[in-house]
Every structure is written in C-alpha cells, then in structure tokens.
Image 1: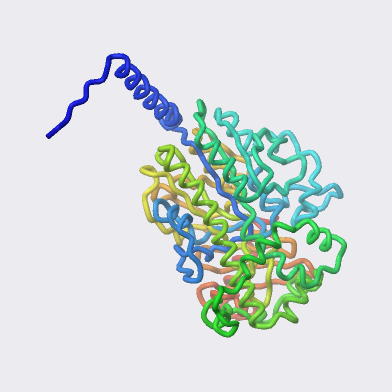
Image 2: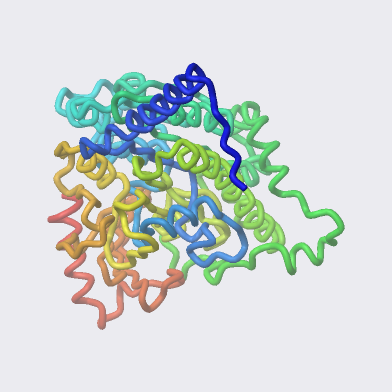
Length: 480
C-alpha cells in the first residue's frame, strides 16, 4: 500500500527551492563542458617508472586508483621524460621546452638540477608561451599544489598559478579536494604535484651522506625518512628469509652493469659517494629490500590519487574533467646495480602517462606504438582541450587525437637529454645515445632484441645503417 504524505505549501516551496538550487549547482559545475572546455587535473608524481603500476602487469604492488584511470581511458607505454631528473623535467612541464633550451647564470646548458635552479629571468617569448600563459588566455583558473623544484623565474606564483599548498603529500591532496568541491564559474587547470615514490632516494643516501649538501638533505628529511622506514617494514610474523624470498620483488633481469658500460655511467655513480656505496656494497637482499620499499611508496601515492578520484566522482564531475597522470622521471630500482635516476636507461627515462575523460576518451586503450614526451606534449595537449593553440617547441604535439583513439601521423623518433648525454629513440626501439660526461661515447641499443639494455650493438656491422641513420636524426632533428 502506498502512503501519500501531504506537505504544507510552505514546505513544498522549500523543497522546490532546494531542488532548483541543486540543479543550478550541477549546471554551474558543468558549464565549462558546454563551452567545450573541461576542467583539467594533471597529477604529476616524482620518480615513478612506467612499469610501477598493476595495470602494467606488475604483480608486486596494487595501484587501484591509477588502474582506474587506465581502465577508463588510455595508457601510453612509450612515454618519456625530456630529462630524467626532477628540476629539468619540471622546467619542461612549465615551458613545453627541453631544459637545455635554457642557460644557467654562467651561460651553460641546463641539464641537471643545480643548473636548472639557476635559470635567470626568462625571455618575453618564454613568458608568453608557458602553460600558464596560454591557459590564462583561454580563461582558465590556475591552481598548483605540492612540489615545485623550479627556478624563481618559473615558479607557479611567478607564472600566475594560485599556489594552494606547499605540502607534497596528503595534506595538499585534501586542499585539492576542497578546490574540486568548490563551485567554479570558469574552468580550471590544476597541477597536483605529489612527492612519492621519491622517498626511496633516502635509503642509499643515509648510508653514505658524505657531502655537506647530502647531510643537509638528511637533516631536513624527517617526514621522508619516517615514510621510507614505514615502507621498509617487514610484515609482522614474517621471517627475514621468507620476506626476501616471497615478499620482495626479485632482482631485475638487468641487475648486473651493462656490458662495456659507458664511462659516463661510471662517472655519474662515482661522483656521489652514496651511489658508489650502493653499487659496491649493497647485498642482493639490500637491493631486494630497496625494490620492496619502492613498491610500497608507490602504493602510498596511489592512495592519495584515490582521494582525488573520489572527490571528482562524488561531486559529479567525472564527465567534466580531463585527468592526466604522469611522472617527472623514473627510478633505476636495482637495474645495473643502480638506484636514483639521471640515466638514459628505460627505468629512468620511460615514465607512465595515462589520461581519462569519461564519455570523451575511449575506455581501456593501450597505446604501445606512439612515442610521447610529457615535457613537450602536455602543454599543446591541455591547450588543445582548452580550445587554444599552444606552441612553444614546434616538436611538441597535442595528444588529443591519440587520446580519442584516432589514427594520425605521428613522430617516428623522440629526443631525451640528461646530465651525462642525450639520446634519440625510434618507434622500433632503436636507441642512439651520445654520452658527453667523460669524453664523447656513442651507443646503439635495440630494445626489441635486448629490452633490458644488457649490451649494445654500436660496433655490430649488421646495425651500421641504423647507427648512421640515428646519428643523422640526432643532429638534424633533435640536438643540433
């Protein structure tokens, strides 16, 4: 039996007013889509390699939030940073240019952290072609929370972002959630810059912090080390033998140094005592423990991503929000007996890049064909979705047609630089590297024949044509 309740006219009026307000609120939150401009949230994490997701087939961790983005959108397997270290990669995010486009205050190419932090005042051309400059012209509100690691001339505040939190962890995520839940009269672009799994850096560092700078880093790293210690905990009731045998990820197939390892790699390791100590003195169990902690720290960031996704869904904005997920660079994670980053090996340079926008980007796409540069391509991509043309480096390309599953002509090669050299990779997995940290050294690698980069094919007569071709492309198309 249906019971009919009669409300007084005044209460009916109140209910009607609330109902109309809710509709108006939803319409306001979705106003930008009516104009073809979604809200855009760029989740930018620190030191995460492309294989550090369960959706990429990694069974030693669980990343349901990141997997949700992949399952409801697209995942690129051939995405690369412009430079596999923090600050230079972040310069690319803001400017859409290679870090070496800039010079430090001594006139040297910017290719490592210290030089990147010494970029002086940038030109008016750069100021007018940053990601912030373009999106302001497109009438977007700009928000930035978390890690910066940028020179003063390119900080979020300098470029016109609303810097809503300096925290790089959950506290900043909570602030981001508040912004997501606000009513916005204009579309917004928000960078959520999370620190983890970067805390893994402190495992080797604290074993051999010999320089004044390293000691200062440790002194300031109370939260980082506490988070690392928690990630390194052996589960209760598990013996050490069982832990290293059954719980830790195994050593990678390329655990040993590369055959004919370049002098530049040796120099990179030997210039920092903690890196040299890890290579020479870490036991196999130490390396396994390092890998275990790295996986746990990646799960820490996944939980923070989940909070953002929950807020977007709960506020009814999934169909109004383009979500992009990527990292500034990767982590060696015991490959070639190395930790940290800065190399041109895949573990360091190949990064995750995923995107979703419900009902606009097809679900569950995996793009394993196209070469992507998050440093060059994110700027033109977000500008494309903001209905404005954004060009800084003409080699940057909007990912929009790829995100939407269209067949388009794409680049055949991609350049990546580092503090020890520069490389070009092609769609067939041929990598040409020109190291310059200890004299000029050339290497030709083949990811199809040797995906773990255990050797090189530079002097193999069967690959001379590839070597000559890639030398030419390196010099004429990427690094004059």
